[in-house]
Length: 255
Image (cartoon, rainbow, N blue to C red):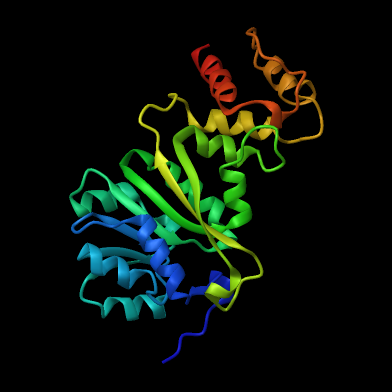
């Protein structure tokens, strides 16, 4: 029976076989690797992945799709909202030190998923995601560009990232109204040791009024915290490199 895509789950199913092959080649799955796919849908990406891996764990919220996927002998199905999945437990269940994570993420909740996975970065070898191209542009953005912001700083703190493939709307059924792309995210070996909530608050304050100089936002926030160190607040938030935000957060944490 044909599955009708559900708007509430943000379902757009990959249907272009050329693009699917290119994505699988970018992921480069190896036999026996522990891998988890988020949102397998109609298994367009799932099937070529499992053919190379031998076995694959999938996370699917749609119960009709989960039922179909359970009929596949090489899939382990977790029927759940991905935001409720404890990836540390998944890693433990797979008996592996780390897992690879892939998926065509629902665009309406892609940022919350990225932040959820950030909690489990220590048990993840790498991530390959299909996302709205606009989101990936923000993830990989450099300072002093319009795309550079909170998402850039938070994710570049823990990952080296690259936009590896453009995916046009006609590659999907139904076609989304936006361009898509594939991002590769590799956790950094030696990230600056920080409390995520501190960095998140700092960056949120900094980018709360992008057009204003930081003395109006972050400067006041630092004063309230009794910060006595050196930090140039005569700049806009987008002019400050990731490394400087990390150094500032580290100095605040050390107080």
